[in-house]
Image 1 (cartoon, rainbow, N blue to C red):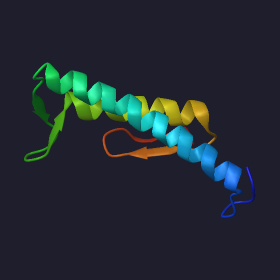
Image 2: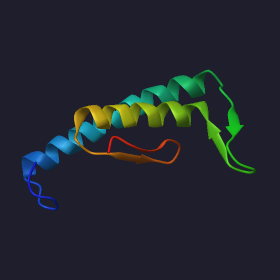
Image 3: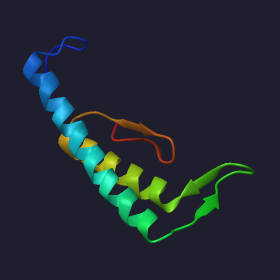
Length: 82
C-alpha cells in the first residue's frame, strides 16, 4: 500500500473490491437469518442485538482482517486485528 492517506487508483479499487466481498457475505448471512425468523436479544436495557447483527459483523471482521493489514472496529465486537 502507498503512504497513509495517499492511495493509488489500483489500491483504492482493491480496497473497494475487498469491502464489497465483505458486504456481500454479510448480506447472504442477513438474508438467511431473517428468513429463519431468528429473534433478538437484549445487550443492554433497551439495546437489542440480533443473531444477524452478530453473524454479519463476524463475517465482515474476518474477511477484512484476512484480506488486509487493517484492524477493525465494530459495534458488537469492538477492536480486533490491530
